[in-house]
Image (tube, rainbow over all chains, first blue to last red; front, top):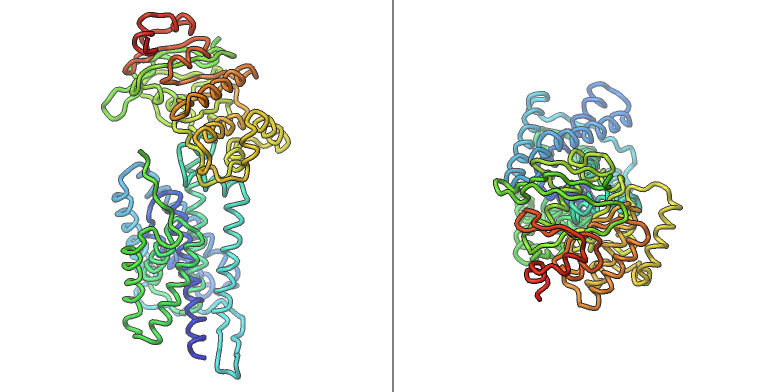
Length: 293
Length: 236
């Protein structure tokens, strides 16, 4: 029975990774850049909800809404200020800038909130479920996380495949120039992608801080890197890849912690990244890269 | 007044001057051919007109409006469509999705559906394969899709870059027949081609481009009989 319980908590953790990985993968697919500051948006979302909901004592729904809005705006601003001027620059320059933005956000949080952990109150009020005569307990956070992940996946898939803006995203991800010739505003589409990715990061931040109820300036860093691993694992640029990669990674981490070593769990997760890069560099759902002649 | 006027256009790639002061005009209802060897600057000129590249100097006027200050994504709704070199269809989307993207800036669903019917009439193969992923089409079908996608914006002028590239002689003739039909339906065509013979046979007027300069211009029928053109471009 404990195996099932570890499995479920792995799926739940993996769902959070998947939501974060979506942001990585969408931004990569459309702007062709790795936004290493993405993980820190999670932390900003966490602090925003903490400030509004706990410090100011407002209603948790308002706090969550503010958290999502703050992150969405932040994502758009970061893209405008830090990445847009570098469009056309080498990918290394953009990567270094992204790492710089990541440190900037972490240190701003350190300056404002200090290094002491703030305790976060879970926003989930769903009761835990006991199954199999109480041998198997599933927390409300776990249930909500998995459901939210499924909803996000469905809505996002519908958005991309059924709406005009979604199809514009697909067009931009395949060929920016040709998309412009169709009348697609490429800069607007990239901004929209950052907005969606950052809003998802805020949701992930709220879920993460509810499941592990404390927050420090580096809260987002490790989940961010793991979600990046998940995105690569699933095939960066692929939305189903982000989901599958995230969940597999969460399960590996959870089972690794339980059955191998809790200290080695992170090492196991990153070993997966190395193995994937060696065996199948494009990931599970990765596209074959067609070199243009 | 000409529909499209390009004046003293200069385009640089870094420090290299690719287009060295090119001027030409396209009148409504014409097929204008820009011919020249590989590297003469034909594609660069088209990319500059539709805003994918910014010129250093010179002006591009389309129906009295200056295109050099218009962002690329705003140009299609002004009535100018561009069939780029190498087709550049969206390989991972279906034929229908590609065509719908061609009408991206249009709002009226009924009008879009009417244009789609017309495009299907002109390219029955696209209708047969509307659900197929575009990357799996043959080269000729991909070229038809690229042209159909451009027509979906209901353009006044259509810019075509090497539509015959990589196609079998039979398909090349088919594509050029379609270009004539497009003109007869009232759309102006600016055609860039390495296949000078075919281009001159459908065009009204033509400009000959050599390393960034226009070296000759005139009626297409005259150029077809011009000795130096025959020697350099027609292989006679």
